[in-house]
Image (spheres, rainbow over the protein chains, first blue to last red):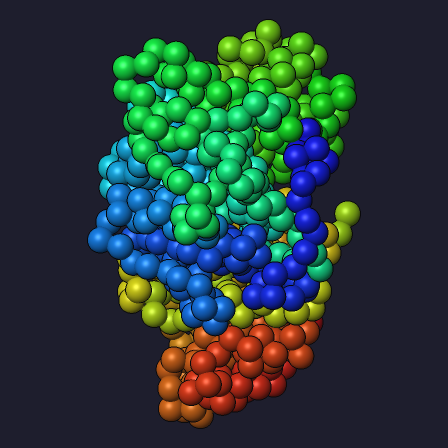
Length: 390
Length: 185
């Protein structure tokens, strides 16, 4: 349920000089993401402004000026993500933030980051779609795109936050996961939390993980049990080839070698899926004796918890499970809760995305609630939906 | 369960509603409270209704938006008409700009009219700070945040060239409210 213990065995507890001092702050979600990135050691940001993610770009640019890191406005989102991939190979922790339309443009390069095993953090502050949609309004329609958007889809890691504090915390987690597993990591934020202002507590020290390094080791193959090879940086003296084509352990192109293709794809898959229990986090509320469970994520979890606490006061047996990790999917947790409750309600600000995954793993009745009007799902709506199921 | 106060500020784009909400939220944060602040976010910078919501609590805020406002601070008639239905029946209080809004006669809610825009023009020659005057008055009436936190929120968040003017507006607001509250206990 918490990645902290095992995954972070190799992490060091420290505080970077340029990060904010331990204290409480009143931040918007976008500001918290920028500060989380700086705290995690991000020193390269490339982007193209887009509502509702622009404030991340603005905040990080002004903070980078103070600490001497690099932020670039590129000509578009494709160039932005490609330059982040380059920066990562040059040794920097790199981040990019965007919203739906930019996320769509980045899909090809996301696949390139996956096959080249490049750690980058990508923040998608979701708004309504498709296309330009309503740029200032909230939605969470990019959940499946995060998983399946790039061709030949391989597992990635995608996180979902419900508060401004969690946006800060999960940005740090995202960098740690990216460095640990050498994958692009997505923070699936939403307009509703990105523009919310809340208190953020910043601790004295933060656990940080830096990519493994081992002189002379193969950068794209490993016999190690976690399946993640060490990653050299250009300029360190290693012979380094980085290619989007299928390659062997040393990065040599193997474009018609069946075994090389199978070996690479299998390892890219298993380095995430074999470690999924260390990655997946979720949170349970009032599930001990619940007959109905709300399965939710992101901002909708705030409405859901409020609704559940109201109904509990009336003695109604309702509870919830909040997904903090969207991908890899919390299949075991869902199957476990599904065997204990009679029904599940899945409220989403899309036409039904995560609900499909839940149906795969839950043995109980699963009821979707979908709202796509650009507004948050109000607690009253969830109360109404739950009453209909009770 | 900790005490929760829900404050809704509304007006017309350009009146500084969003800024007033941010200052109020920051002041509550300075008081050591849990706060969630949200506001309308759109393309209308001037004109058009806009709102700002602040939820202040002694413990972590579960749902971060206003469900039933304890206090409505209103600076424009159409926004007032729209948001008055969000105010808590019976115990809710409406604080409005006296020059700009005529309260609904049918409303049973307690109303307090503040001459915010009027005073801003007369005493500070700037309509721009009416938002801070009405906010100051509202803070004095409702005590949702301390006066010190309000002043330091302004000091920390206002650009230097506007700081002095806003602090004067805040002090006018804080001291004027008394005259208008006596009749309502």
